[in-house]
Image 1 (cartoon, rainbow, N blue to C red):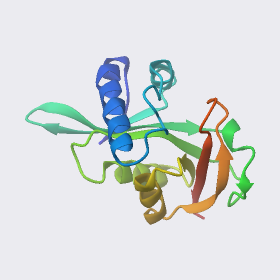
Image 2: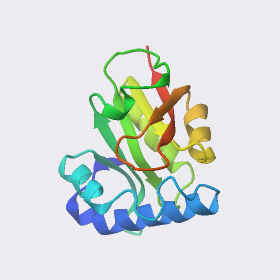
Image 3: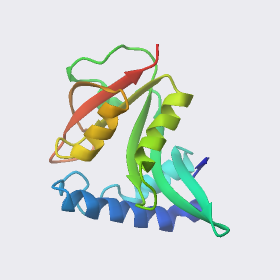
Length: 167
């Protein structure tokens, strides 16, 4: 089941992002989120703007967050310039800050599939060292469109850009 995050979810969400940072570092990707991304202020803003979606289940009467992501409608300023080419210039949504809790297999893929079912044109990006997310995006039918540069970070800003458009 998917639902919007609420302020009450923040502590658990921050734990999941910390877990994701540790997992990325252990998997050879220590710089994508480093030790501070996503910043708590960004997570709070995502919740307040109702951009954060949670994949949840229930076990023994308790809700568990399996994965979380920001679903950002409208033009993403980071995507204005690409070394390569987007599939089209149609309106799209962007998936950002996806993280799984480790409680269920394929949780990130489930988030991507849910987004594809609800929005026909989806973009995403990931760090060149994030082989796991590259695999998830590519096996979910996303096309590798080129390279973009993040506008909100001082260093390590190159990302591989992806898009999937259900025609």
